[in-house]
Image 1 (cartoon, rainbow, N blue to C red):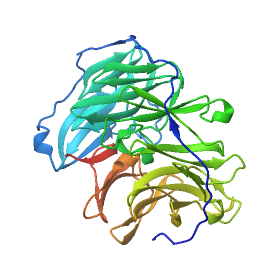
Image 2: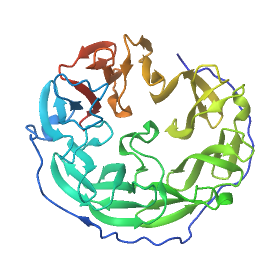
Image 3: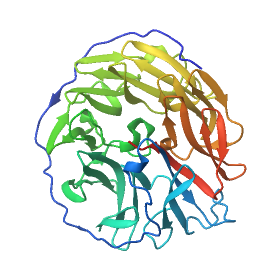
Image 4: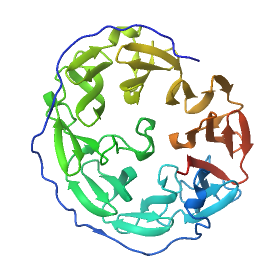
Length: 411
């Protein structure tokens, strides 16, 4: 279903960025490095040999175990695997006692390597291809991970919800005792790098303190290359959903006004109110920014009324571009995956619409790879418990007991 063109109205106001000092960063010091191996397999192909190929990560459970019901409440051992062209590249023991979690959001394929995060007696253990790279004495949640100029950047939030640490090649770079990282690896709006954003320079991220709203005692900040800059959030906003920095200089914010009107987009010194573009006593789920056609746009899911279906709308700075049915937060241009109550409803791809042939579940937004021909999507059939690969309308069923957790093209 294509987006339906509509119009919008404009308002004007002010937003600026100012550099000020705030709480100092400190070196945590509560961390150790280790080369202890827990690897039960090894990469049999070099990273160079994988260039241009599609690689899948997968979670495998013992035969006969119904992972859909999870009667052991996660206390079961299995494998985390890397697969390519039907060939097993890497197999890691996972589950209790291994430091590797059988979860789709606790492992990440970066630069052809499999990075995992999991619990340890000390706190949190990070591994690369099954070998322990770093152990933190804190309980942490990985919010961002990316490669930049050959260095690995990681961003971890304290599990308590306050405080975070930025690391470069596992060395603490900056830490903060308070503050919450904006964005994470499970939000499709932030992509494979999670909270990290890049604009051609060193990766940056955004965080907030005290709820983030200035009139409520909070604040937002941008951190990059050791520089912390406070982001001036307009007082017209009562709720902030997403914040980006256009080319690292102009702030872009989407949210709701203090009067409850929304969505409202603030770009530089301009404020635009799109409240009237959707009719109905609606309830919004979220708004997220994305870059397309040389400008920041945003999307959000909403219901016109409490008893109507969920829709996803897209706005440009000129107004409402249109909407698509159900949750279509995973998209590229006019192509999208439509989900209803967590299950795949349909796929719009390369000008064609494809309906689901069963109760198909998408474990993660990283399970969608947009290609020049269309899309490759790794899903699970909840009726059979089998993993499957959807390749522009063609479906292939996997032979293992478990599910695919990501699909990526090796660069």
